[in-house]
Image (tube, rainbow, N blue to C red; front, side):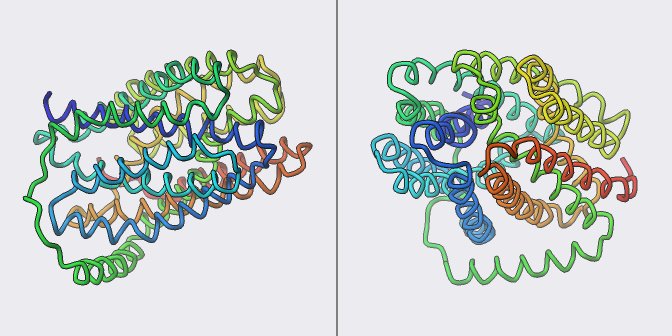
Amino acid sequence: MPPVLAWAVFDLANAFFAVAMLSFYFPLWVVETQGGKELHYSIALGLSSVCVAGLMPFLGAISDVSGQRMRFLRWTTYICTAVMVLTGLTKSLPVALVLFGISNICYQLGTVFYDALMWQVTKPGELGATSGFGAAFGYLGSALGLLMLWPFVQAGGYQASFIPAAAFFLLFALPSFLAIRDSQPAGPVDLRAAVRSAALRLVMTVRSAQSYDALWRFFWASFFSTNAINTVLIFMGVYAKKVLGFTETGMIRFFVFSQLFAIAGSLTFSRIIPRLGAKRTLACIWSGWIAALVLIAFSPSVRWLWLAGPMIGFCLGSTWATSRVLLVQLSPKDQLAEMFGLAGLFIRVSSVIGPLLWGLLVWDPARYPQAVLMLIGMLCIGLWLLRRVPEPAP
């Protein structure tokens, strides 16, 4: 299998974790089966994301120094899937939340090594096409995850999906493990020097980014918008079940249908970016998110969610790709890797605050409309900050 295809298939593989543990079956198991609150899940997610934000620059530096990104990707995948199996066996909610936090740390760290491998498998001049190729496989994996895990849920409940999800994750990850080789042979790594280098690099990167006003404004715009987007992705399944009364079968149909629009959105906006520019395209995408959430906030019904879901899917398909293009255009070209690392820290922190605020608000189920309005407010702040970002050169 060609390395670039094997690399893209890994995006399909880790989508099984995202479906089972992040946005669908595990949150539903916490809330519906175990009688927990969204806040319990938000705390576990937030604490694990903070750990990722702290570990990411150091482990990234170690993998850079050693040239052994595949080695790190393998081990994070092995640990993640093993802990998913343990989560599928436990009956204790506190234990399950701790195990989920560990598996999420491994999953998130794995994406760091996975993204770094894109430079290794891509042919010159095809970085954007490779990125979109991997994204398409990721959305395909989400749809497959919903369909392939559903029979296990029907037979044994939400928790019955965790072990099969781990098995499918590992199975579809094997092509990348076999086809992609590390750039350097395994050998000893000076851990202390790598950690010191990572800390110094992080401080220098923050200072450097602050000197680029447009880039710093974009980081803050993304921070607010990503808070809202991550919260939607995490809790939409719980919202559809608890507030709108979706059946399990109805949710499967709804989310698979929305994923098809995500694939369409990623293909459509990749053609729009060269014409409108990345900033204007991203403004259109965030405006689409706002419109979809307005429908959900003011018309909380199954009929309107079937309209809002495809809108969200269509915007989701191009959100990250367009942001990546704008980041490249705004960044100094000799510091791209550092700026991507700093953007990753903003994204991880934003995945903490939004879900925590959502969990606090919906502790009282009567406040679901206010929680959705909070997300709309975050997106509006992000859109306003984006307007203040100067138009970059193409």
